[in-house]
Length: 208
Image (cartoon, rainbow, N blue to C red; front, side, top):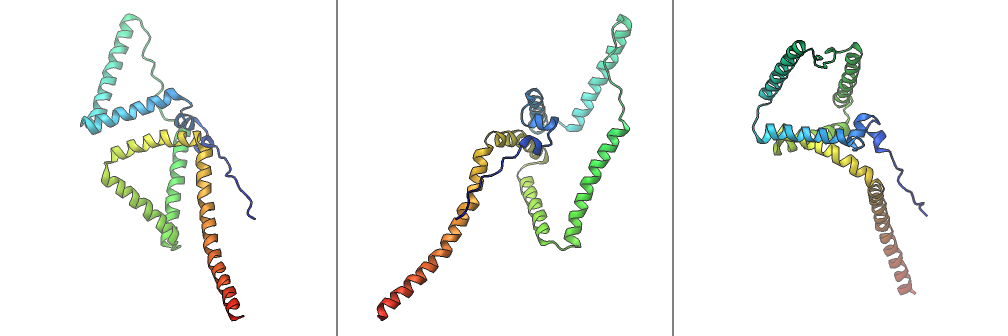
């Protein structure tokens, strides 16, 4: 008798890192989530539909920002107003070290995969890498890079929150698939045995 097992519930928030990014992706900070989605949609519309050049867009934004800050500071000195609240524009050593550590870990992971394929001759890793690259290449043939990134943003803000909301139902359905397949395989193994047993009993009855 096979004991019934229930899928263990996992925390989607912890799986996403459990920080501010996880709160934004799960719409716990809905203002930031709406802002990111609105910004992504606006940029996609400007660059993809309106045909705006990203380089020209960045140059124009920086141009307007520089002009506004200059006249703001000039008028503030003439009218005895406070200067623009601009923070110290510098990158700390701690931020550089953290970014370097993250990049180092990612690069070492990619190099370890390449070593598994080239030196270890791991067929499973080769199949996984080629499958992922083929899927990316196929999606890239259907849309350009900007649309691909925009679709990734939409999926990042929809799939985690839907899975977090309906996790019990999804896990139950996914858990039932291997169980049903195992029962089908067991039934396929039992039926030939029953047929052989029935044939043998039939032959014994005929011989008697």
